[in-house]
Amino acid sequence: MDEALLRSLTPAVLGVLVRRGADFAAAEDAVQDALLDAVRTWPADPPRDAKGWLVAVAWRRFLDATRSDVARRRREDLLDEEPTPGPVPAVDDTLQLYFLCAHPSLTPSSAVALTLRAVGGLTTRQIAQAYLVPEATMAQRISRAKRTVAGVRFDQPGDVATVLRVLYLVFNEGYSGDVDLAAEAVRLTRQLAAAIDHPEVAGLLALMLLHHARRRARTAPDGSLVPLAAQDRDRWDTTSIAEGVVILQAALARDRLGEFQAQAAIAALHADAPTAEETDWVQIVEWYDELVRLTDSPVVRLNRAVAVGEADGPRAGLAALAALDDSLPRHTAVAAHLHERDGDLATAARLYAEAARKAPNLAERDHLTRQAARLNTRRCP
Image (cartoon, rainbow, N blue to C red; front, side, top):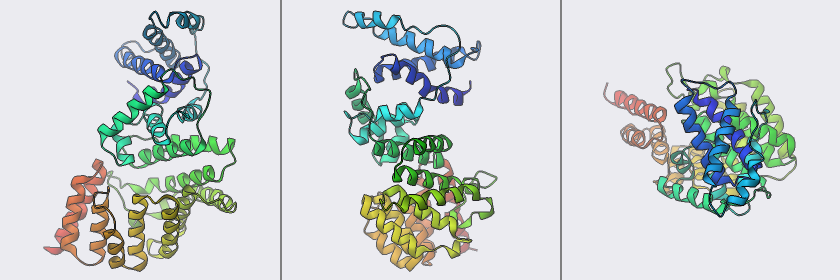
């Protein structure tokens, strides 16, 4: 069973049902039922037209779910739109669905969560990690969002800011998480940048390109993580870096600074440094100060503490870190790094081991475990 194919077809099938009049929550349930049918039947009897098969089955599931006295008249109207046999035209509805999920009836946070779950393909656990909330809390938030939009006609698309937030979170999960969605997020952001003249859309596209350019260097041949300072910069995609810098410079020239432009400026400073030692950490701290002003995000403040530790020394970094909640994800790993730079190897080794136990994925856990082992070996030759 080609799970990647099913994942790639889901937004288009969902879009067909929504355009035919299905409310979003019912359409999502029908598509999920069709996907389960595909998992059961395709290995023995694969269809010639995968998308057409999914549309037909999902549509039948939707009609079955609406068979009641209250919905009978609406159901009869929809029967005329039963999909005809044969291939379904290839239309990319994904970006449109992102806007439809960012519905005015939802709060921005609920719209983002719903879109990530229904269109982005992320699990509730992954979305909860992105929002720094318990999985049960996120499950309730998504359920409330579904109930809110149940029966709503999606003729009022949401705003650009919410869609950008979704694309950013999808890219981050694809870049460092369990599901490879980064390239898809870049593709959709390119589409959005081509359709909308907006400096923050350009800023997000630049940010994605600059991060994606380093992707090949982020892992060793054995799959282990390679920290930024240790990456082989010859493996970075210089074409993507150059494109990202040009896009960013044009966005910054419009003097409408937003958080994605500021993040892209930080990424550009890393990309511009010939070696890790030549990184302009002073400028990076300045950009983090702008980000704190724009977002007041605890994660931004955590990353700023790392930059302060590089620009002004590890003691300054530890002082900045002390002002933050130690329950923040990766707080312990940052503390370990700063203590190592300050020469306190025993504390750093203990904190690396503690951070490994809290790591959100296997690759990060293995990396932190190796860091702890490396320091313990240095201390006990």
